[in-house]
Length: 124
Image (cartoon, rainbow, N blue to C red; front, side):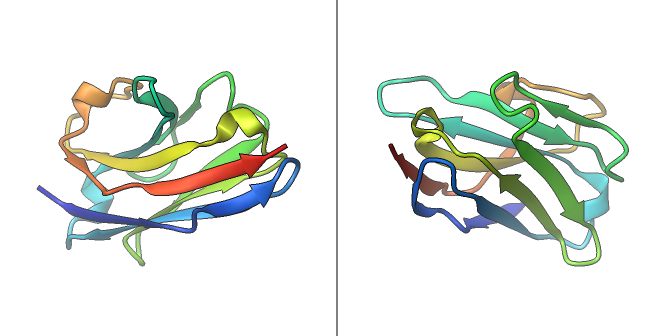
């Protein structure tokens, strides 16, 4: 498994922006498909965004599309999630996941490694 560490969460007002980062401790980061998921209190973990190994393929949830941008820097073993025009309903713990499976996926079960999460709280 790969060790993942998220950072960049915080408390912001609606309409603000945040940039999350996910640092991976591996020498083969470019072999990993990566994703962002989030989990709000009392809710199941839900897909936010996916990025393929060389960033050619990206996918977004309907709620993230047009507001969030996923990216990665394979030289730095780091993935990012730029979140703009944040809404109160974006409040959740955000997790990054890593997958060695050769699939483009929105399914958390396809990701083998997870970070500890970073809290994002958006006040209205």
